[in-house]
Image 1 (cartoon, rainbow, N blue to C red):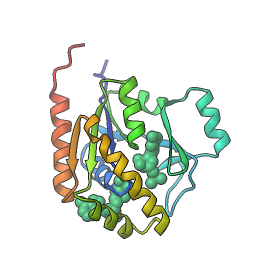
Image 2 (tube, protein in one colour):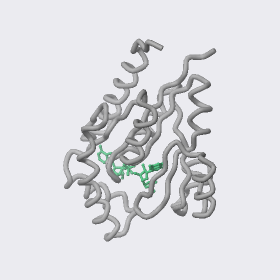
Image 3 (cartoon, rainbow, N blue to C red):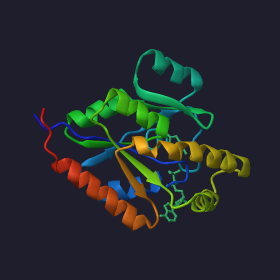
Image 4 (spheres, rainbow, N blue to C red):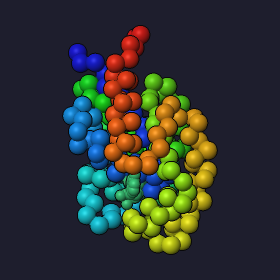
Length: 192
Ligand code: ADP
Ligand code: 5GP
């Protein structure tokens, strides 16, 4: 039977760089897969059902909550998002490490039910840099950006409840640091 894969959570405030960093990690790491979440928000740009998210309406999402299909779910910036138990189980059972790119409330919920989960928090170098990155990304309206920045201050306070904190100053360095965490966690002796 293959060794069970690791459960890794990567969180950051919106604009912190988690999507970009994960894309890079997945490009080079054949042992790693990303869990695809379910969401009630509409697809943006080139996003496709089953690639970035399973897009669903609110009634469908609530049905999945009732059927206990989520490892965790949360309301983020006015939409529902949830990690599907089946997505995570399938990969871990096959011995693949799975990464959840989710918000802070979701990350902490995962840790409550799965203490073995490895939580990595990505911090922007400053709020000024975070604001510039959110504006530079060009996907959000001005009021959305100020809401995300307000929320970011609350989320940053939760970094101390994570296992690792990586500052995303230069992208390649942040990616290297997370790769170092993954290497160490894979080498760790687990007494079970
Ligand atoms: P998140 O998924 O956390 O909301 P993104 O990955 O979408 O954040 O990153 C937000 C924006 O910041 C994107 O336009 C991305 O290209 C840019 N970005 C990410 N990391 C860095 C970095 N280290 N330096 C400069 N820009 C960055
Ligand atoms: P976006 O709409 O920009 O893709 O994501 C908005 C926020 O929701 C991000 O912080 C993202 O990490 C978070 N998110 C995405 N999927 C999930 C999930 O399954 N659970 C939780 N709790 N947050 C999620």
